[in-house]
Image (cartoon, rainbow, N blue to C red; front, side, top):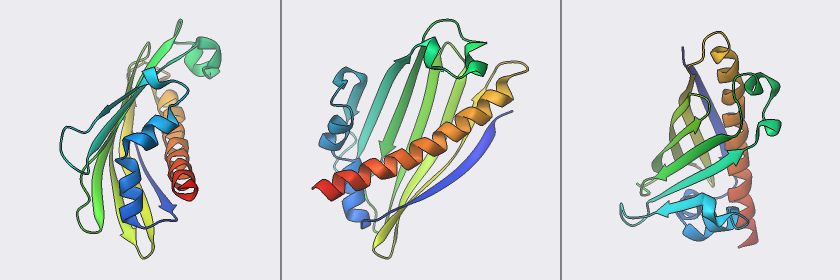
Length: 164
């Protein structure tokens, strides 16, 4: 059974600047400057939109013990962030994730919304791991990792905007 989650982070900048950042190729290229081959960017859906797809390989020794019990070798993971155009005081997005080596699927909706002079990033979704007996435990672990990822995204956006 999939585990659902809701995360919300406040970003200390106005929505127009935050949205411009998450749809800026240079922002994503900077985040992955040490491994540009792991990043694919697509802005073909039109102005103010962007899909950033990140791929990585995680060695077994870097995985939590519970996951190492069910995965042999490397784990190939993929995350895709898709942002739509800014529509007044909000922008809708989607985050998806998957992996090979372990049947995990992450599916989220994301929203940037104005809240006074700051922006709120809301992420709601679910994670599903189809492994008998331990799938639920791994789902709980992945759910926590998604929450950490949302916080890291906030930090990266604020750093980018603070440095510009």
